[in-house]
Image 1 (cartoon, one colour):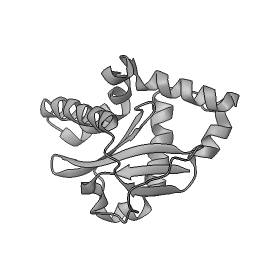
Image 2 (cartoon, rainbow, N blue to C red; image 1 turned 45 degrees about the horizontal axis):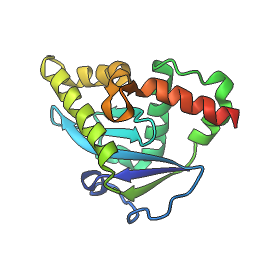
Image 3 (spheres, rainbow, N blue to C red; image 1 turned 60 degrees about the horizontal axis):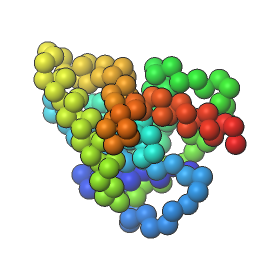
Image 4 (cartoon, rainbow, N blue to C red; image 1 turned 45 degrees about the vertical axis):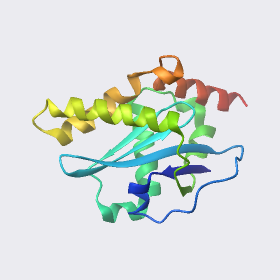
Length: 171
């Protein structure tokens, strides 16, 4: 099961449960934040343990009704783009493809700080480009998970996610 902790801005567009109180094992916790690039809605999902991020660009309000498949498809695409091996890790893919449970944010400063930094990097990158939406898509697919993260001892999210998947498969 995946717990998605939504910022207040995103929670205003979709129905979410109150704040998640209990810590359960075998769950992944992600933060999600809604922001705009060139007047278009974008959602950044960031996994709490590895800071692995998935960026949805140009999201329409009507698309948010099916946020499960939006997230799942974008996550699998991002793993493939980052060349994170999934073939031997089929059990992890099965764990990915499950129902998302949406909650209000827990205000985890470390994860939210990483997300704000990534969004700042994204906006700075897009400001130099003519087609900001295409630039945001490129940044999300090719650059975002390769950026060293200071709060994680300057490791990058690709390597941390690959290590996490390998750990899960070995169990």
